[in-house]
Length: 52
Image 1 (cartoon, rainbow, N blue to C red):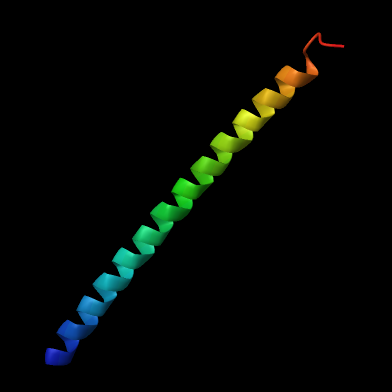
Image 2: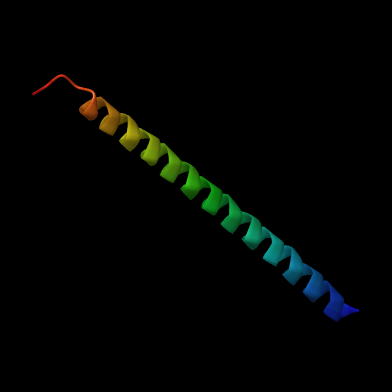
């Protein structure tokens, strides 16, 4: 039975690591979307400007 506790602890650690990795990926995607929107807004302002 002692072996089962080590494995359940390992499984819990794996779940925590995967959850952390998932949070980091979601955060990175959010930053990418934010940067893409900002770039699109700046591009639209440049294209629609009246500067010759």
